Length: 398
Ligand code: FEO
Image (cartoon, rainbow, N blue to C red; front, top):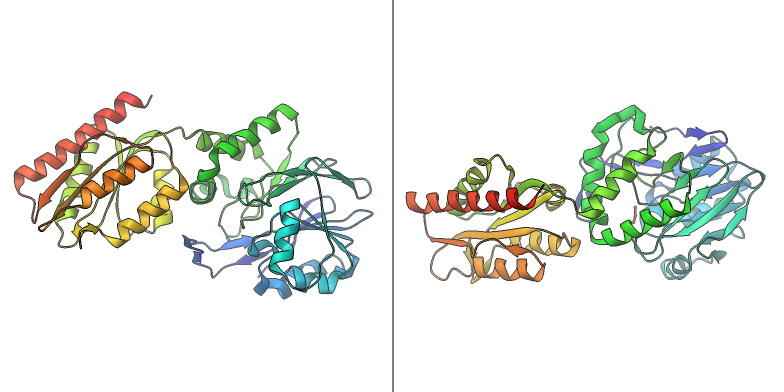
């Protein structure tokens, strides 16, 4: 199912594709994913990252198609999360347990905590270099992008950046490079950014600025998931710049759940009101849409409009799930409003407003609650709420 791909002279992508995975710790991966790892042949042969534990044999087979794994001299661990280091003990068994694994200082601690088998770890400083023959590797600390241990490795001779999780996508299709898939990949990239990196946007900005200031020339970006950026690495860098600035569109996401269709009726009227002023709207029922897909739509939306019935004096559990998820990913510069049907107590709107406030969102309206089934006049108010939100979006988004 997989063969190593040569990405430059003497450099190979040797990772594995996970065709089956549909839930990546709570992120919906409808098109699977890949665990990318890279082999550099030089005076010293280098392996950058490994794969999930379950793929260790397939991974070693891939490497064996290029060289005998025992001929690898050095391993680099850019990131210790288990999808990139799980196979490390099995791989070191084949490569040679005494071979050095270079990692960041936090990587050193993490790998020691994760594995009981002895590993010959050596931590590197930010900016430290390692000569491997005609090439030199340079290590770039990228703490919290997206774990404390994360780092990039830059190959000076070839001007290739091995970027760990950053600039990746959960995609396991036929294409290996950006020029093979074109713009189709960008929705995967956006979803990945929204769900994994949005919360670290200020750090992404710092990184992009420091890389620009250093004048680092990047001809190719090799992330640990998805396609390799060989044709236009600037495209994904520009996208990260936009997303991390949290530049937003004239767009609202109406997120709702419903008990006896009343909140659903309200949601549709709110959405109609938004759309009536030519503001883009997404209507997302939390029991039909996965939280990670909702987050992908939130990425560029100026407004979040959330509807929940009241149940047991609270909001619906699925809405609570989505709100907790969104809160953790820290979207900035958003406006919000709440609505919902209730039977006799009706706390949901107030609870949602408190959540918006805790997230630093501008509350556009006190919210709209309707007892039992919305009458025609109630639905007109929902439409008006939509219009009010749309007007505010138009006023604030250029
Ligand atoms: Fe792809 Fe943070 O692991």
